[in-house]
Image 1 (cartoon, rainbow, N blue to C red):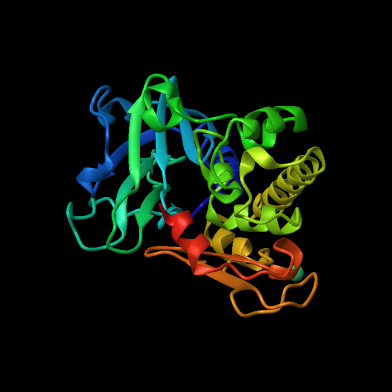
Image 2 (cartoon, rainbow, N blue to C red):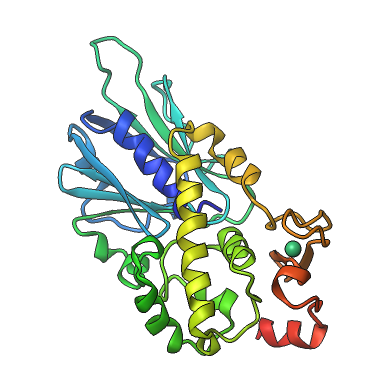
Length: 291
Ligand SMILES: [Zn+2]
């Protein structure tokens, strides 16, 4: 799933490639992906792309005051296309393309560049919105402060109110925006904190470590991701991870074996020596976590 660093990199990529260019048209392939109807997507035709940015994990493309916003969800991605065919993809097709944006050619008769929003797998959750204000998107209106824009004191205040376990608290977008399953594993490992500690019970020292790890891990990932082509971002993300998705491999810090906690539809990883004083997560705690 794209998280803050990948979405930031996609926004940077679009600022370089698409800002200043004019939208020719959009093709909706997965009708269920489009969540808004006013203004209509046809309002984008002939309008100039004037900016690209991010709200948590939402990508926001500013098209002369209208905001084309997408949430890539777990298996979604943006694929830049240097040359698009004129015929629209077949709506309701079985392929991964959900939405396509064509830019007007830079030279008359030149190639039509643009991008596809794609989604792999059978669970279709990618969402596209066209709004006048980003806050019209319910998921954006609910976002907590951005993870990269938070002081250690603000983080302390925010966590003091959380009754949840740390892993859940820092991935709850209404508490803190931008962090998902992968980077929370990395942040907690770097901070040497158990994912199961109650967020409200962190000591001042632990909050300091968490804050430093959060900023460090995210900034590092942004630095590695920005400048990567959209196509190589996913592998770049994978290569930078130290614990996430590395079950059974040695911890790069202490050499202990990375353990996994799995749920029906996802899993996360931690290092017992670095994070839980050598304790493996017992089933009893697992079931409490699932509730
Ligand atoms: Zn370790």
